[in-house]
Image 1 (cartoon, rainbow, N blue to C red):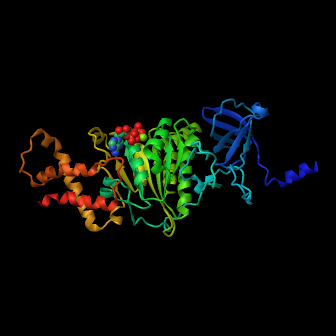
Image 2 (tube, rainbow, N blue to C red):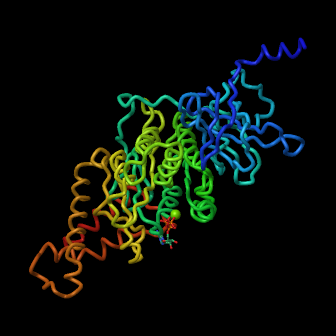
Image 3 (cartoon, rainbow, N blue to C red):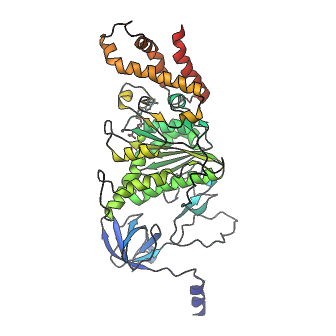
Length: 463
Ligand SMILES: Nc1ncnc2c1ncn2[C@@H]1O[C@H](COP(=O)(O)OP(=O)(O)OP(=O)(O)O)[C@@H](O)[C@H]1O
Ligand SMILES: [Mg+2]
């Protein structure tokens, strides 16, 4: 008895336990739970019937409340849950301890999501809960840490000033990316997003690559890691995969975790490249959650919270404090062809510092990477390249655009050579320009070479 009392006194705090009263669709409703929004809970069956008398607990997160009812989203399968199950704030998730190291002296507060962060993640593939998916044994050299960091004050963040070599010629030369920039990759399905992200993962000048695969098909995850990323990309990468069949809460958590991993390496002074595929599926997961707990839909079925979540996620990447580390991030945004009305694409365009549009027409012409340079823009390019080079890039765009606009006329033979000197020049340079913009997916192009190549291409007129 004394022993038991002693143990009760040792418990850091008593958590209020709730009872599961309702499950509708995706949402669990609990009465009597006093856990704050965002905290993790375990839903436990009253008379456990699992192996050795213990039913598997279902992890869930508090996503809303009304009076004394808390709404939770499950992170796992709710099959078999019954009314009356207890809902208990979860103990912090602690990954496999490092051998020979003392236990952390800080008692982790229960209910706060903690996920493994550390150098041991390099080269690994994990799920949104920090469990390895690559069959390479448990994670080592990681520690369980909370993901929520205080955001960096905008005034203390270093501005984007240095160019970043992405290894992709068309981007390097015409859409020069700066370290710490956040760019959207807008494309419909099957036009080469994954291949382009893979090229960047292999050839970008970065210390660490973090890839968040959010809401994609399961098969695509394996393909991306094995075929596209390859051994070269994988060695310096961390992949967080939350495929389409994961519950919406985990898809969102996957994006937050990938960002958290990038922040971890950035704070250690590394230059990180974060590739998130896709931001649209992240917003869709939030839409599922928000609609399920009763938030009214606004634009095209997306409740307002979806638009609030996007900048919260995106603002976490960027340059670190005082020049220490950076996160340059690419977020893919699904935009089907002509649908310029897609509210997520609109919102993303507004919060990102640049957009690269992949065009289906180019992909159909087997022009890869299918980057539509006329529609794409890097908002920091003028900060990271010399003014003289900016002029060359503008000139390239102008000539290229001149040809694309009159292309049908030229092809039909309706244009008489000689009547417009500018168009004549554009027609003459066209093959070289098109060749310059295309690139084999297994070859990287260095920034200096890309820029010199652009200047050579437009100077070909001189003789
Ligand atoms: N740089 C490239 N060079 C040659 N072929 C390419 C290149 N990029 C893409 N492709 C071709 O386009 C196809 C589709 O590319 P990818 O899988 O990257 O598209 P996606 O936009 O990721 O598609 P999904 O929307 O289905 O995920 C590839 O199978 C490949 O044949
Ligand atoms: Mg893809």
